Figure 1 (cartoon, rainbow, N blue to C red):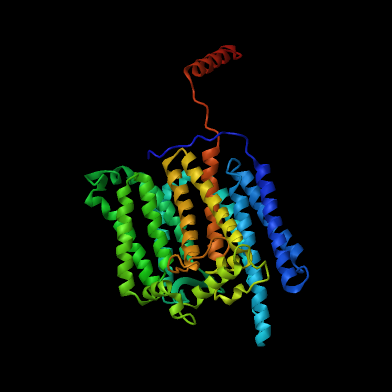
Figure 2 (figure 1 turned 90 degrees about the horizontal axis):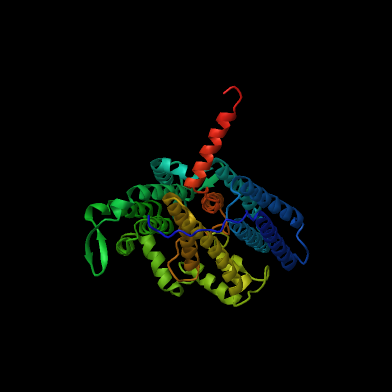
Length: 474
């Protein structure tokens, strides 16, 4: 791979900076939690202290794990993710308050809050971060398991299709039920397939870079080399057909095409991937009713504002109500939007924190993506470059897909917003993603061993000979 390599300045690890920023992220989350309680009940929530201590303990453990296992990793990634996770917990708690109020007004039983369960899943996510950092001490070792990751990832994608294990929720068959838990295997499959893509493209990039002919300034690949991208395209369509999941289908195919472009530096691969995406989209629109409904609702949500377009219409109303600075935490009605804590949590943020809050959240995501891409550029091995780039792009694409959907920019896809949306599988998998990014960043920022010059070699040889001569009894 001939991608440029950024030579980092090898300063001592700034773990103090990371710790201070992490504490600052926890303080912001605790203050936001208190603000919600003051707005709803006129007093501080009874669990504010416990919430702050619990969140602070979890992120402190994450910081200590990074300091122990990846001391040279980028000091900005963990605090940014901690702040996103904390704000997500606050917004979910806000939606819990509104759900309780509505249940009391209707005389129904108060539903179980989602925020406590999300805090538990956050603890599991931090545990996943620690385990991945502790087990994967060298990211290059993952390359040995390229095809194993592919097999396990594809198996996880197929699990929801099983008749007993699979569960259909809101029209999409993406979940499996294990005892009392409902899990989404595609979140873990995404990480495994990115590892597979990175290992496969490192091994095959020379072949995939070959051009058959040049047309209009583009070097087109050979016809026999189109197999991998066609296979990825077919696999993404199968996810769309079997699971009725437009978001995961788009995500998997786009990640592979972008990683293929990064590995080969051939723009033609992007154009071929875009052409296949457009062709597959048109085919899916005319063949599958659920895709057609999604697109028609996107084109005109006000055509059926009380049924098919209700979610999107209420989301747009929420953004409009929030305006520039928002109604304030606890002062809006974000729970009007169905599934506000999962697919539409950005609409809740837009209503109560306004455009300022939305842009702040997007900047935090942009910071994590930028630091991940910086790690990719600085990494010395091709596998690490592709792995970090694939993980960063998957995060960026996931944010674009969900934010674009709730704002009406693109059709709704049902993808969760990392660390903000409610969902155990999503938050655990994304904390594991952070661990892999930190591992590559640590390798990229770690000081390289000093080169052995002829002078150093002669001095070492002379020193060794002197020791042999002076050894007693020689």
